[in-house]
Image 1 (tube, rainbow, N blue to C red):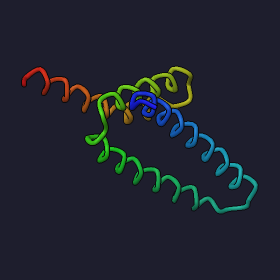
Image 2 (image 1 turned 180 degrees about the vertical axis):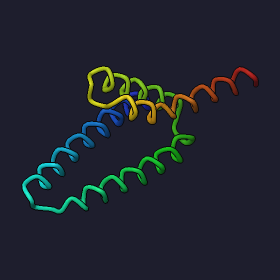
Image 3 (image 1 turned 90 degrees about the vertical axis):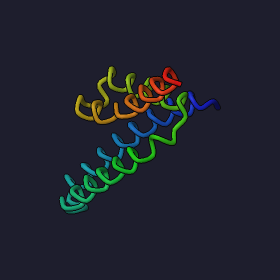
Length: 106
């Protein structure tokens, strides 16, 4: 699998996994199987994973970033992620632009 395809599939996998986990967690809270405080822990874990995601971006290949952004755009257009999430996940676009600017200057 090329880096583009891998980035594309990773974006879709991450978003679908997040949606499934959120639905399952909500079902457990609604049914009383787990306390609501676990939802807060889940959100905290989400913030930590987003920070780790941001620190990993500079090491991604350019084709991987392009595939990831296309996957993200498809998921956003289909309504599976909200506008705020879309904006946060556009951070790789800035790295992509910086790489192109650096290439043009060299």
